Length: 413
Image (tube, rainbow, N blue to C red):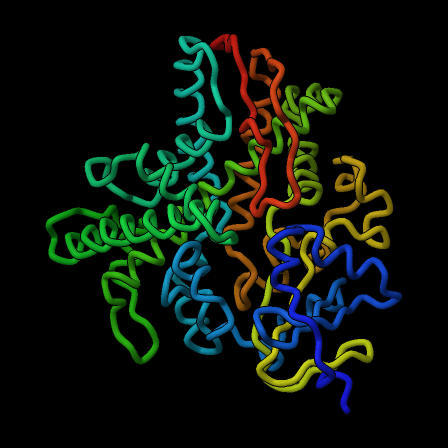
């Protein structure tokens, strides 16, 4: 019997209970950067390493259409999202998001968010306690909505922030978190679709060149304008990942609390160090455990095979903590990125490959820009960190500090 046809025990239950450690624990026992397993009832091959990243993002190997489980689409990405497309359809839809790669647009978004942050900090001094994760989500929501051209009258920023957080928080788990994520997506898709229709009928004004205008006017290859619901999905696919930076903000606060020696260089406005710090937060702390796609044909990697229609997994968390790549992967050391900027297929918290042509997240530059700016502000924040539960459970996906990182006694600058 061929190796990939031997029956394998389905490991989906283990994934749900082990979280981020599921793949790294199994690949640790292998002498090769590959693991053959079974997931969601299908044969699967898990791979790791820069060469594996290029293998994974080869469109002749993997397709996204039909690869993302419905529960993930119904919470995190939305039905019909760019993440589900391949080939020319994917490239045409991706054109919507390519402006996110432009340095000027990233800088303007950062200005909107840091302005909202500075305004929020002034109000924190009046409050007994502040949960940084929650406040970061609210700040990021206000900033990205202003940047994207979403009229303030069209959204309840606090409700939108909670819903965008819920979409991310509940995509990878059964139970109440998943149900909240589904309800949040349905609510915001309906509201955002109405806004798109208002822009198209001139009942609402989208600023020229804004993302709201782009998504309302976008035409897919051979399909014409996006239907309002799909347009809403793609608008949310800019708002949601921006608000997801709140996870990294909480992690950055956690890192500064554990290793306060890094505060001085951030406070001093050392831009190179701020960028290195942002990269190290994204490498060190857990966000996406892995990425997956459906195999187009039978694939073989380092002697292990998976049939057509199987699953190819890229071990994101494992690669970001691979000793061969990082030397001391469980040491938080931003200086590693001062010595050498990360290769495009080495550091992959938001995927690998070319963001302009492939499936790598085009908002990665946004994440880095926002995180380095907010890390400086965190380092300069005059406050007290009281006793709290700062554990980061690896069984929970996505995880974050249990307390959300609470601060008290904020002194406004």
